[in-house]
Image 1: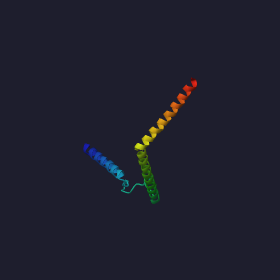
Image 2: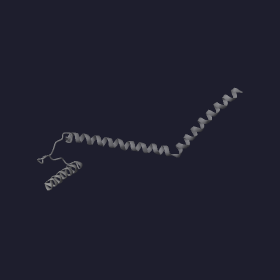
Image 3: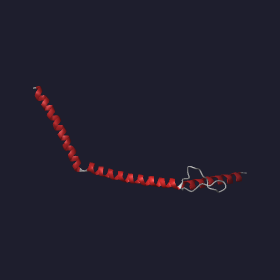
Length: 109
């Protein structure tokens, strides 16, 4: 009796592993008679596949363009001239604030 249960358990585990491997690698799953199962949402028509390929191509191009733009922005931000220009603007802002402060003090006297 234990021998029969062991054989059934081994066959069940083997079937589960076989199905998992087939599903993982994209092979069609088989039913009990060895026919391919049609789960509806897993089967795609050629039109759907072509549409997905076109969408994938479009998204890949957009991603490449975005990566190029980010690279340009990184170069601008890390460029020493950008930092220098920003520091000059900060000094100008501080200078105008100081002029306003001194103008207020001179009016108070």
